Image (cartoon, rainbow, N blue to C red; front, side, top):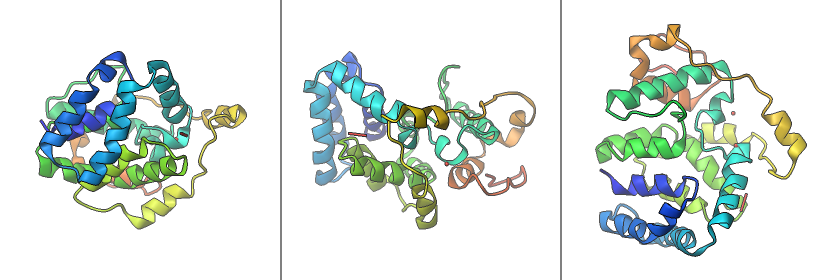
Amino acid sequence: MIQTFKVLSLLLTYPTEDIKAGARELSAAIEKEDLLSKLHMAFLGKLIAEMETRDLYDLQERYVLLFDRTRSLSLHLFEHVHGEGSDRGQAMLDLKALYEKHGLDITASELPDFLPLFLEFLSTRSLDEARELLNQPLHIIAVLRKRLQKRGSIYASVFRALESVASGKPSVSLLKDLLRVADDDPEDFEQLDKAWEDEAVTFGPGEASRSDGCNPGRIAARLRAAKRPAPGPNISSGSGSN
């Protein structure tokens, strides 16, 4: 298992007593694996220290404000390219199939595109494969990092670390496309209500059961662009503070 991806996954999970209690173990795990530079380790160390010492209620309140109430900071990857449209349902099924193909079973309540879950999956792959898969949503990760940095959020350290581990660089054009989307104000409740009034996601049979559903290239393209027409079924198919 690649411990660094597992640790980064936990750091992006809703804070719990268990995470607080194991904070020092998180630091030890990534230091031992030595995938991150000293600079990125230092940034992450500040977040881990807060996880250990800050009041749990404060940690949870901050997390909810950032990632649950700020749609432009959503940790659900497909939200940034598909919103709540019907295309997201197929993309979810494709990603779920990829997980299951490699032995990662998820519960009915877990959405496959949740970034901590994606990172947990990466932790089970070889380092080369994990880095290659991480390249696919890298433009989303870079946008989240920029938005968190703008807020002065310590969580930006996790996204900086992910960018440093990936084997490639985010697409400049896709990055610009995502940055054109307005950043949310979690205190503007009227804006939030309007933002969440979208089409519901459906996970039904039919097209979702095609045998090519677990094709990683297809998932990659879905992460890269939601506006592009869906290609054929054979290979490489296919906008969420403190």
